[in-house]
Amino acid sequence: MKLGIVGLPNVGKSTLFNALTKLKVHSENYPFCTIDPNYGTVAVPDERLIELKKIYEEKKLITAFIDFVDIAGLVKGASRGEGLGNKFLAHIREVDAIVHIVRCFENKDILHVDGNIDPIRDIETVNTELILSDIDTLQKKIEKTEKSFRISTDKKIKEDLDLLNNLLNHLSEGKLAKSFQTGEEHRKLINDIFLLTDKPLIYIANISEDMIGKVISGNVIYKKINEIAEKEHSEVIDLCVKIEDEIAHLDENEKQEYLQVLGINESGLIKLIKKSYKLLGLFSFITIGDKEIRAWTIPYGTKAPQAAGRIHTDFEKGFIKAEVVNYNDLIKLGSMQAVKEAGKLRIEGKEYVIQENDIVLFRFNV
Image (cartoon, rainbow, N blue to C red):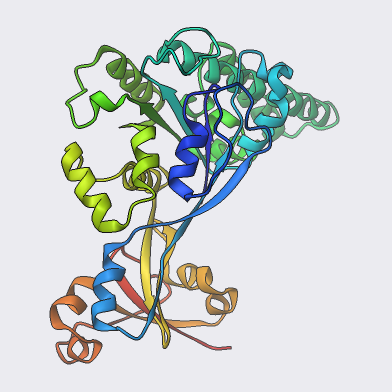
């Protein structure tokens, strides 16, 4: 999974990236400090692995991972190349989901590219540039489809052309591609165009330190961000990027103590990972090998052979069966032998859909 961090300049993108990846990238107080994207890989915290380590002390833990991309700040006119915008928009096209940071606090020492703080305007600025870029992409697709239609009487091409023109009208009204309503039979055509505004989106409301731990649902600006997200079928997280950067460099015990003092149950990283998995319809199952305990990320609805293929393509090709144990049963009974003796180990075939708490051993022919 690859998440792209976007937003206007000086809203906290690079600082959040630092906090997430514990890498030090430039996060200076001027626009376009970040020109080329920064890439970082983040381990997905998984309490199940920690508990399993208590049973299998000799085994190595390997978590699932998320790739983050810190993309340079977008500005008005980015779709026309302003602020090196075309290059930045191309980087967004490569990610699975967008994390859009919106600055929600005043600080005269931190410059804002538009001179004042207005989160709703900022969201509209970024979304408008993404939409304009998508319109350009879609117009090129329509031109190619029209050429095909002129030399063919295929009704399917005419249907595709009508669909693309309807989508173009939708975008021209300032709406995101993902809010365009169409049947599943047409969704593949749209997916194959890789439109920016068709990507899953999480808004991060970057709040001030004095708002941490407080109920901000009544905040007018925060409510408006949630209203925008609800219409777009997006998600919203409130966090203080500055604090996230500070706690990222603490050990686990110090971090938990600091969070308790602040009145926070979990870090922004945990919030973001949970929202990302939810938005993309993903979860992790577990394998226990001779030397390692490992989490593997797959979409909900994945059948056993395809889950095996996540580990190695040969596993999917030669799939025979899956030996499945529920994580809670293993923790309760204390060993795999005890699970087997209790009749809790299941043998599943090719049609079995992997579940979130499954611990799986795949059997296959080489």
